[in-house]
Each structure stands twice: as structure tokens, then as C-alpha cells.
Amino acid sequence: MTTSVSTTQLNLRIISIVVFTCICYLSIGLPLAVLPGYIHYQLGYSTLIAGVVISLQYISTLVSRPHAGRYTDIWGPKKVVSLGIICCMLSGLFTLAAVMLQAIPLLAVSALLIGRVFLGVGESFTATGATLWGIKTVGAIHTSRVISWNGVATYVAMAVGAPLGVMLNSYFGISGFAVVVVLVALIGLLFARTRQDVSVTAGVRAPFHVVVRRIWPYGLGLALGTVGFGVIATFITLYFSAHHWQGAAFTLSLFSIGFICIRLILGNTITRYGGVPVSLVCFVVECLGLLIIWQAPSAWIAGIGAFLTGSGFSLVFPALGVEAVKQVEEQNQGTALGTYSAFLDLALGLTGPVAGWVAGYYALDTLYLLAAVVVAMAFILLLRVRRGI
View 1 (cartoon, rainbow, N blue to C red):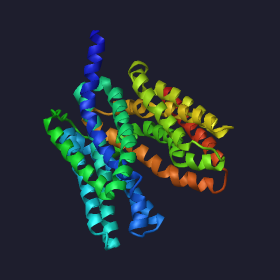
View 2: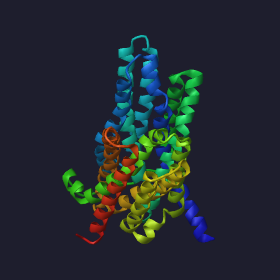
View 3: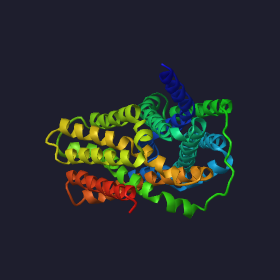
């Protein structure tokens, strides 16, 4: 009973911090399904411009991730999280400005571009800061649990945000979700003021290139393992359409169910067995799932493949993240975590266009075979790391 209570209390302490991640990704999810249509149909810009506006957030996140980690080490996570939430709020305010400037499309789309930059910075600052805040609150021994809960908060917020944004847009236009972004951010800032900060660890700050040199195998393993997620998220709808199947959305849901369930049920295996062994098992399961999708004779078999891919990918980030932060001193853990996370951003940014280029020459099925090969490369890389080669 004591263990059960202590575990519950531990989880509640973690949730009280990762709620800021939830606020951040709710801000990201709300405009996700609405903003491209607004730019294309209301402002009259091409789908290319709409894509550029949406993608600017991801570029902003990628560029600012290492800085978010460094500032977390120097200023402390509470201040960095607060700055991140302010950036999310500014993204909502610039979206409202775009509505007011809609009569002048160039000014409106410029306001949206600025808002996307702020949202990208908000993502990197809030997510990185909240993760380190959680780790320092409950102790480094629970790093994997903190990262796992952070991921659950991300997925839940995105899953709620996208349909909520569509609903608000149908009643109020994009100003509806923009107001919600601002209000949620204000609530988040007020809640952050009530949370206890953690002390900043004194010591020499390692140069950025030193941190990269220490954590790159784990970051590269994460990047390679992310490709499977990228091709499912981006191309599963087209894959189903090419086979004249129904249920692509349900298949994406199966991926998410596998992801969340494994995070919640088996997240503690990282502490028990270590990050590298767990990641090796994850890569095998993910690879198997992708191969099943590649050879799937029906939609429900492809759904099984997606479920296995989500289950396998689920623990890759926390498993390798635990190992990455172990490679540096405590005063450099924020920089390590931010840099490590940037590998995920880079992989997601590259997977879409590269896979799209490949799909122009080969059948969509081939993407899942190639993704399985890339994940197998991650397995080989981490196997070499485990053996100290």
C-alpha cells in the first residue's frame, strides 16, 4: 500500500509540472487543422504559403531548442517555462491581430508568421523547461518517468486541441481558438507562480560542442527511430487511399493508443533495465510494425502494424533521453536535453519532404519498408553503443 501511495504521489508531483507542457501543446494543437485553410481560403494565399507558415513553427522550435536547454541551466526551469508560456500567449495575440488585419492579406499573413515563430520558441522553452523542472523536483532517478509523462501530456493536448480548434473555428472563426490560447496561457502563468522553483546547479557550463559530442549517438538513435512515426503521421492517409481502404484516421488512433498505453504501463522499465536495452527492444517492435504495414493485405492488418509502431516508438524518446542526460554533469543537463530534443525536431522536419520525394518515384508501400530499414539502423547504432564500440 505504501508503495502504491508513494507512486501516486510521485505521479501527481510530476503531473503538476508537465501540465505546462499540456498547455503549450494545446496551443499548438488548436490551430493545427484550421490555420492552413484560413490562409488559403480567407487570405487567398497558395497552399505553398500555407505550408511555409505552418512549417515556420517547427523551424523556430528546432533553432531554439539548444538555447532553451542552456537558459534552463542558467536561469532555472521555472523562469524558462514562464517565458515559453508567454511566447505561446503572444502567438495567440498575433493570430487575433491577423483577424483584425484580414482586409490587408499581406499584413495578416505577416502577423501569423510572427505568431508561428513565437509558438515555436514557446514549444522549446516550455517543453524543455518543464521536463527539467520535473526531473529536479522528483530526482534524477525518475528521469524516465518524467519524460514519459511529458510525452503523454503532449499527445493528450494535441488530441484534444485539434478537434477543439475545428469546433471553435466553426462558431467563431480563428479568433475563437486564438482567444482560448491567450486565456489558457494566462491561467498557466498564474499557476506557474504557485509552483516552487528548483535551485540552479552551480558549476562550469560545458561548451555546446562538448555537449553535442557526448550525446550525439543517443540523439541520432532518436532521429532514426522517429522516421517510422514521421511516415505514418504524414503518409498513412495517402497510403490507405492508394489501396482504396477506409479507416486511415482510425489507424492513426491505433498508433496513438499503442504509444500512450505503453508509456503509461511500461514507462518504469527504463529505470529497471536501462535506457539502451529498452530502446533496442523498442526498435525491434517498431521495425516489425512498419514491415507489417509494408506488406499489409488489408486495412485492419495495417492497423495492427500502426499499433505496433506506436508501441515501439513510445519509449524511444524517454529511454534514450535518460542516457543522454547521464553523459553530462548536472549543471549541463538542460543543454543536453534541449540538444537531444532537437534531433527529434530535425527528424520530423526532414522525414516529410524526403519521404515525399521518394514517394514520387516508388509506391507508397515502399516508404514503410525504407522506414523499417532506417529504424534497423538505429538498432545497430545503439547495439554498438551498448557494446562500447
